[in-house]
Image (tube, rainbow, N blue to C red; front, side, top):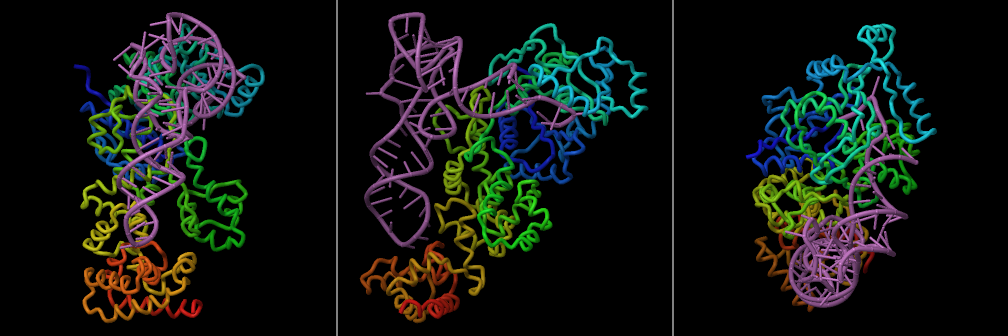
Length: 547
RNA sequence: GGCCCCAUCGUCUAGGCAGGUCUAGGACACCGGGUUUUCAACCCGGCAACAGGGGUUCGAAUCCCCUUGGGGCUACCA
């Protein structure tokens, strides 16, 4: 029996968990669970400049929402902690010392500017930049001296250059790099923190990680990391699996920039934009807004989201939390993410987490890039909306309503459950919400959709029909679905028209649009009083224009 | 520029590693029809692909090479 499988997801807390990160996390989780192994969450917060204080919690929330749990990591502990790299400084220091002592790493004193210059020069001259390893490594005393003089002191790993570096990748096969391709890289920054390439190797070793599953963008780091692993005397390196990149259906790599870019483009098409009001909504200054419009800067995500919501601009979902807000189910996300570059090979598509876990095989991960197809995602969501256990769906629905601060959030469980039941086939929780809002807002807050008014209310006979409906409704004592259905169908029959001719004007009168819950339920749930009042208000408002 | 990776319908892909059963299968999207109290959903039907060129072979989507195209990396970021 092979050793126990240990995988890890190692995000840097620089922002929300996005699609790419979630997929990486999921693949690692799936592989660990499939093998009855261990899944570790490790926070790679070694860049003091980029870390956001709230980001880690946000990533944790998103993972939990997806149903991805971890055996070791923040908030759950474990035998190999701490799991925040910023708290492991002493550990990294020890290993850096070791390499220094053994002559496998050396001090450098160049400033960032000097390095930039060298790099620029190198690019002009030939191809890639290679740091010139000194014939003799600086001594500790020299490093002290440099530090005292205010020079930055970094430590570089002397990458072995005597033979090609060969990486065996589970998804990509054997890849070899010629000597000289992988040059000496920094393992300890001048602020004393380790770099990613170093901390990651040390931690994977100490945490006994057996499989490193990550994005293709790390492929070029792998030979160096592997060499480091060997230099540190860590024994056989873990197995690597580099997944392809997920590209956006709007072209290019799926990137967080898509959201601000979409908003900016939308803003440009708006002629009478109240910049002051908009800036206020976003919690930014007018200058910041101007700068954003000019493409010079980008406000943070919450500001972007708030402004878009205010203007009714739909932004493409990128972060996991965006999908939550748009009414997608975690079941959908997990299923769809899993199929981004992997499939069970037997044609199954709609699968639950348990099925995914059972079927997942890292060796079946595809080499080519996959496109994030939002159409297919939507179709998947419809399917999961239908399949998910109704109680569970109710839980998801309530969480979603709270998240988007919907007026429906105040509704009781029975009502919400009923909405779920009667709106079977809905694409998302957001659709459910939209279709039902008219029940939970005041009559005067109803906004009439101009298209609906034109298409339905201003059609000949519509107002007369409404008047007739009102009459019969007023005469109906008990507002049961049965009574209402019988009455409305009877009316259609009397008038020799399809039910649509009756239902549509009524629907628009009640909710202002042509889209709502089924009409009998709509009327029943609204109640007699409200229904009559809304019909009256509609007749009063639109009656004159048609007759 | 250099290095590395990838290449089947519009999209996700099955098939490729063990060449023939592939006149290339499924799903999403799209188009047409049906159902219908709205939006959906649902049912039926249809369109649609092995990037190009060389090899190897009796035979290639499958193996090899080149071209083209796409992607990634090229930081004291991860």
